Amino acid sequence: MSRCLSKNANTRDAAMVTLDCTAEGGKLSNCKVVTESAPGKGFDKAALCVADVLPIGSKTGQVKVPVRFPGGG
Image 1 (spheres, rainbow, N blue to C red):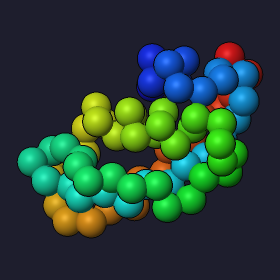
Image 2 (image 1 turned 60 degrees about the vertical axis):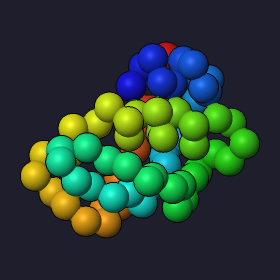
Image 3 (image 1 turned 180 degrees about the vertical axis):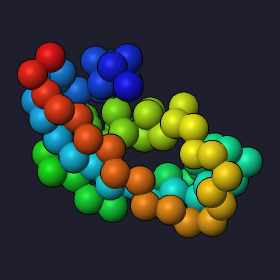
Image 4 (image 1 turned 90 degrees about the vertical axis):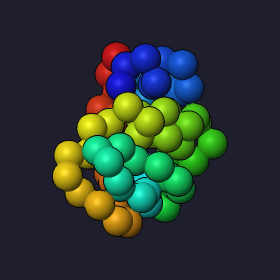
């Protein structure tokens, strides 16, 4: 997560992003940003980056994925 954050947004800022994704085969795909607490600051891109590597287990179908960036870094 820290690699995605430092590449796309300011690590000192906090933000919350909710993604809507398709879960299948232990991975997420076709993710879209649904809500974003700090628009225009790159957290949307950071959350999409995290979704690419986030293990999702056995869930399948459409899922909402909250991604919290605590800030202070």
